[in-house]
Image (cartoon, rainbow over all chains, first blue to last red; front, side):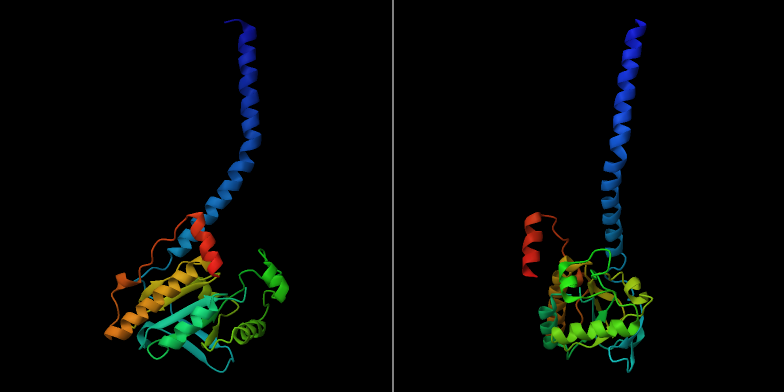
Length: 87
Length: 156
């Protein structure tokens, strides 16, 4: 194979590799972030499942007058918890 | 927590057979937060820096939405929100044996299906007098179809 052919082929390989290296990190980073976020949410959603023991909680009421505890041993009725904020 | 209308009606229907609590946790989209919404900016809701400020924002939520459900406030260490993986919002049903009878998916899209499941669970409990089996609380997997997302956001 003539030497100029080898040089030509090498240049093309270097050009293509360089272009991919430049474009790659941004694209991969973007979708990677989304993917990581999706996986994290999935993990959190699966963190507590039906049949798991409910974590004990002991919190102050809105007026600060008393603390309410929700513990497995104390539950005489089913307890419904709505977690949320204003926004 | 914008779907409070359905939440209050569920409470009114079943408060005699179950204990209900709103647990106020750190803001999802505070005006000064990482992902502020126009709604938060319009209402001037910033992330409370103290426990008293949390109580003030929670009181505003309760009064504006005319809620009568007892409200608890998570501590500034967010320990309960973290333990329940509850941010930004999430619904749980705890059985009398202390096990989770239903665990909603996080976020506004998970809220309504979970609330519906809670209502079904409580209706069954009220009718039969015994707690439904664990399998009763299993939620359908959320659809990824775009059309369904639109319809669920329209319901809000």
